[in-house]
Image 1 (tube, rainbow, N blue to C red):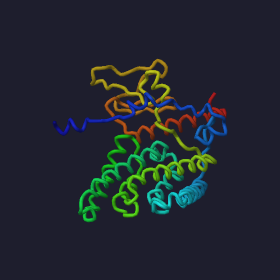
Image 2: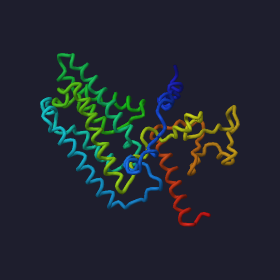
Image 3: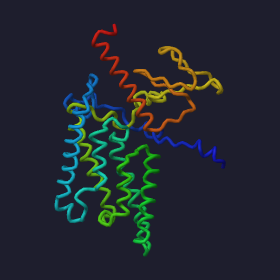
Image 4: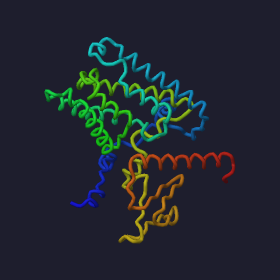
Length: 299
């Protein structure tokens, strides 16, 4: 097996999962509920960074405080956990500040933390089988963090604070002694963070940008490839795809983004984060078009 062959390996877990994930139905819920779940009938107006800083500060304060208050419950305290799993301090910056980042979306918030925590606990458990665990704790921490990063990449749930959770599961004695009880504590903390985010981030902003994937799952279930279309370069065996509705596709090696469509060359493999960024740009273009239409600039 050559190195060039390994470079072409690409696991897209969403090709299997997106067929069973239901399309977004939040727009069908009552307006007061759908609003705080991130749905908007009209484009959300941007706010200045002073208000962003205010809501980020209030969100981090509220989110961290809620978790700490819940961890004070006697049934939880008797297991001896810290007042707060430290990685949720970093999570507060993502969830209340950079709320449009692909890393801050609910899939990453919940599943990224769960995946990384499970990997960290599992690797630490293996190392504790050794009588020299204390001498190997540093190695367990590095391996736990690295393996968690790889697992999150393959599952498209990259969540930077979760790497710290996997590390803490190995190198922090107070966290390590929790064992598998750490997993439900992390899930509880991530859920509380998400609930607080939905309440505070939707007052003057919009969160989340998407719940599971930026790809339109409705189109996916109708047999289309999803929200990101591909074109074949002339050097391939196929001719470029054409769309009678949208006209000719862009030239090879060109990425086209409109308010309705994203087209990238067929040879480019996009990561989950890159897909999310392209979808955010497409949504922004749609919002700009709507604003121009409402102002009468577009007939």
